[in-house]
Image 1 (cartoon, rainbow over the protein chains, first blue to last red):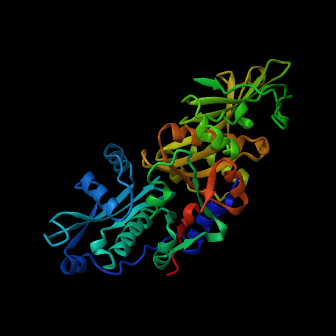
Image 2: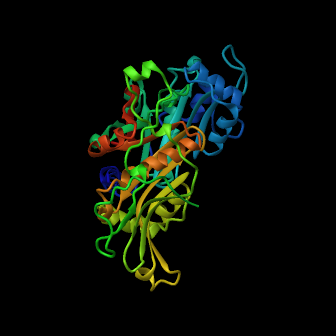
Image 3: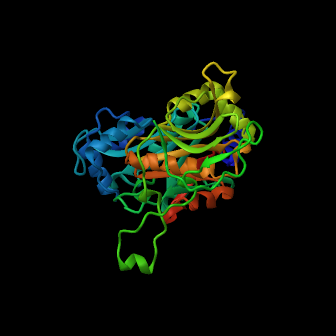
Length: 190
Length: 225
């Protein structure tokens, strides 16, 4: 019914010779560790659900039901998060201060959700760093279609990272529920 | 388990003209529109709400009879919506070729089907004399598909919605997506999303999808370096 989207993915593969090159990592992990006292973590292990909800709340996302959030993390294809390596005025040692995740079928398509950085660390490049690393992982896994839903004010940021909006007229759509749950697409958008 | 959603008596227009002479028995109401009665009062009466797929989720079934036709020799053709049934990757790719989509490596398609949270299909099932040659007495053919990736809790994204061109134009694509959305809502998935070409925006809008809700933009990774 709608071939363009699939064609788009295949054209992308053709344009790049079938091998998608992952985005460059603009700032290495070590620099974040020495300058900011934070480290990047992969996977859900070590994430405290209450801390994740605290982070969501800080960036204006709604808190989620802990059990469902746990299920969501278990069924997320890839999670990347940031923890503070030292005690400071704004975080205790080990605290989760940044987060991003992607759902995927592991081969053809992926969608990024819940990109969040603790306001105390915003403007330090953590958001960009999280997205570079998450995108890199998805590209290296050979997934040709990597998508996200971006709030208007962060579209520019994602464009800098190699994402394009509405390519070839393809639009993001969401089913509008009658019973609006707290935290629809807006709260969950990257 | 097979469940028929109800009878409206309208005959399918262009069905099985090649293999069977169609003799319509029923077309369930999901192929038409069936708004549920509003439970709200005067406020709703002033500004009638559009019917939503949420209003009538229906029973949680793995299989739903959409169309059934029978003919004089007793052969029966059914179009079924099926949830989670096994879909052979090669069948899906055959369908992709038929609608003009580029082919994808079978191993990848197989993995994508396996790793999807929900795979919904439209199946043409023919039984009786017309299918006598088959060992089971019935033949099945994949004529439509949609699949969704999900975190099993909050978000789902629908991909690869397609219907065999020979069976397009009778509301089957709409039935497929509607049933899939209902299935996702029944599983309490609150955020159902997709990416749509400009040509199919209205197709999804009439089902309750909104483009760029609250200004949110769909974005694709497309490196320029």
